[in-house]
Length: 351
Image: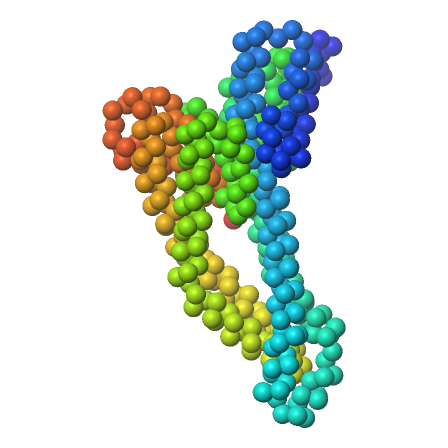
């Protein structure tokens, strides 16, 4: 039960302001005054904690998931249009006999469209499941860091962060009305002042106004290297596109002549092939990510930062000053910090 003197405020996360990259409007900080006459130093600690929570809880993962799914559906529709307009007539004219061509007309566009989208449902369901677990892991990592920041000022304020909306409930009362559901390890979380987190997914819509000059430089460099590694792997994997094209042609031939079971079989083969190749490509990319983040981290450790982007979350740690003053070599510091960061990430492996 809350006492009568206890005042609780709720800072709602403003999704529109976040989409518009206006971090100053993401939380209505004027509501803090409703807590009462807070000492200036306590209010300062609270504002710093809220800023650190903003840095480690970027919410655009939902937008990315929706864009990815819509993009896939759009491309699937475009492929079907190409089949109807170009591939199907070519097959009928140059591959089938006149009798076979006439017979294939029994399967109208609607029937072909229906079976085509039946074949796409497996991919769509797979993507929905994958996105669900990816989002779940990303959110849990965000919450780990957010709750670590909350813990730092618990002697002044009780703060509960909603793990779905990122709304904040704040009270100055000493009556704790929540429990930490996330694993907080003092040993693992003792090396940094704060951490900047982004979902490691496409559409890097980052609000850099909340960052200082060095952090903006790091985030820009991280984005560049991720996209370059992705593009290089795409160029080196052109043979995959050729194989996919062949499977598509075989499946569309079957769809044209009405061999629906064979069509669905080839589409299932295409699904398996793309998933296997995705694993192979992802593994190669991850090796390159680790190599590049090691180079970047060793460079920026001198400036007080450690970088990790080989996991599902891009993390830029502002290190405690002790690491700049330790006198240890960058390679030694990197190995130590890399292990600590991997330990944190591994706590939330849910696949």
